[in-house]
Image (cartoon, rainbow, N blue to C red; front, side, top):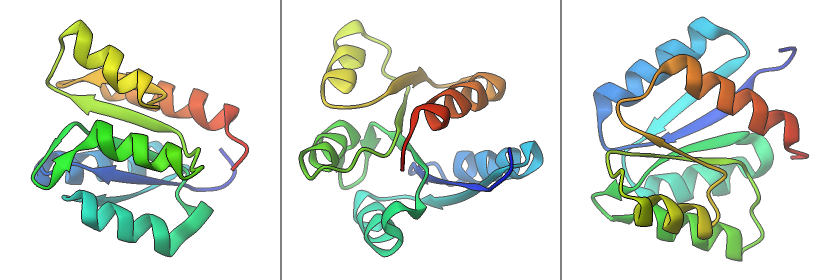
Length: 128
C-alpha cells in the first residue's frame, strides 16, 4: 500500500481498540484512531470528512447501536466502508447490520489477518 489509510475504530473495548491500532501499524499502510462512543465517532468523522478511509464499528456501544449509526451515515450520503464488529452472531443481527449499510460483518473474536484482508478489499472498491 502506497498511502496510509485512516481507520476509525469505534469500540468501547479500549484494549481491543489499542490492539487493532498496534496491528494496523505493524501491517503498514494503515493508521488507526480509536474512539469509544458514537458521539466521538461523529466528531471524528465531521472533523476529517473524507480522511477516514474505513470504519470498524462495534454494534453495542454505551450511547447507542452501531447499526443505527451506520444507517444514519448512509442516509446522509456517507459511503465510507464500514465493517461491523460484534459478539452477536445470530443471523438476524448480521442481516440487520448489512441491510442498514454495513459492507462487512465480523464476529468477535476475529482473526486479524481476515480483518486486514476485508479492509484491503473494501478500500480497493472505495472511491473516497
